[in-house]
Length: 73
Image (cartoon, rainbow, N blue to C red; front, side, top):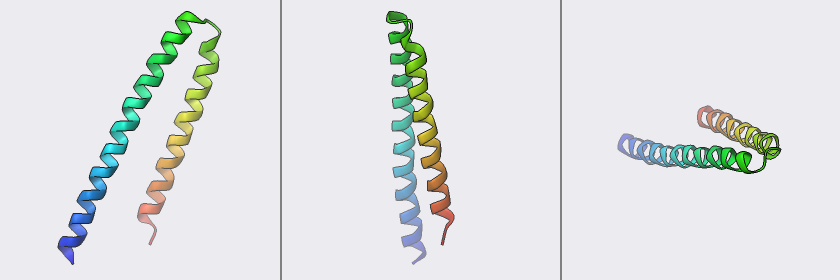
């Protein structure tokens, strides 16, 4: 039973690490595209930064819900 719990922990850690890595790469691409578009269209920076702020807020909420769900019995 203990080995099963360790295996589940390792698998869930790998899945979580993959999600964090994907999210980090996506955020870097979004920030890069925001800077690029803001150089082309000057007024677009405020619009895109607002969308980026909403995206970060949604990820933070998802992270908090994940932590609450992980420690809930």
